[in-house]
Image: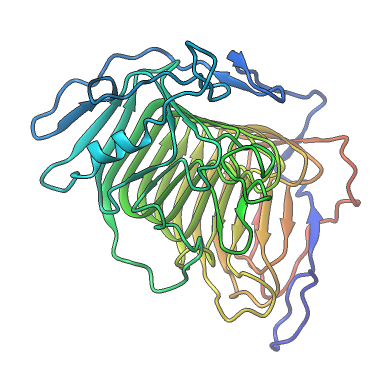
Length: 413
């Protein structure tokens, strides 16, 4: 989309460009590998988590073991079949939902998933005060074929319909944590996976199905969780604040398989030590989606990427939209990645607020890509420090030099 002078101020044309100052030439590629437990159909692997003990009991917390509430835990996490008989596994979702339904601020509940469960969706209390804790490798969930819903979300089965309700943002609940388990989203082809709507992602135009979908919450911790084979976004967080996603692994191919997708409003987000192998944006900050609102204070550190982009920053839904938002204070440091597209994308569409993205800082990173920055919208200051750029062999238009515009601030190296 080209930016035109339609408001009396100059907007920036869409262009890819590489900032040469502050970028170090590099002559060799880099990469990372994950050791897999078992191969999935299509060549994906489920990385092995370390085996961990059950959590030490904390006063005031109710603990529920899946094996002690009648869950069969008979599911092969690779393909959803019964790991003992090779026939149909037992749907443990209803038992888990019933056991967790009473979670409140005065009665927080932790589910200990001590095996592998087939689920037709976990729909847990909307206001939070619940946790799911696995025991590492071999523990977790496989989303049942025909679920036509998220793997895990807060609220009732229809809480996420539609995916983008628009403003105003609801009051937030609090205190949800997920740790040390695997979720296989059972992507399928739109007819034989989680979605049987005909589209892999879900009901196009109404609701997509995510691996994990947390909405309207503060104080979220997602730690050492593996999400594979997701129908669309691996983990979606909408109207959320004080979020930490650490040590997580996301592996899926296909359209719209973002790794971490944040919808506005959102604030105070930390993303350390994660690995992204995705078919779409590894991290997306999308202000206009969800309940719509500004996004602020995001820190990405020590992550690895094999994806089209590292991070997308969208402040306007489409050219000329009246819903305009801002993203401020985003830092990316000590990350490495190989990208089929451009790592940093600012958009989407002309007519955004002036300086709609401010204080974007990239440091101590090694990035193999066509170019570093793809711009669709106005932005403020972007700073690069000690960034190694490795030109990739992917076909791309010639990179432009640094583009200067009186309505933009500066890019510094």
